[in-house]
Image (cartoon, rainbow, N blue to C red; front, top):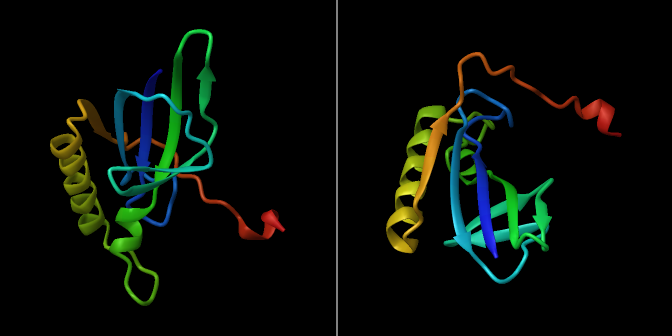
Length: 122
């Protein structure tokens, strides 16, 4: 099955930040990922994916918190530039090691940030 992966690499505390980097690639896989998955040893959280078994294709929307988590200090502050460098390193590793042909894009500066209110989640 041809699967298109659209990964949001989180580089700040804001899930929809303009500092985040999106990576998109297509691979052939026989199994359908759900919940979480590993791509080249990188842990991804999968949400709102679309699987069309009849067309033998899917779109997998995933979030990777690794850059943010790797570059967070003891006070919970994220070094955004370091997280972005980590993201580029991960993308380069995935591209080289697993021969993933894809594209990465930085977010548009006009992207409206979205922050979840923890009080509304209760």
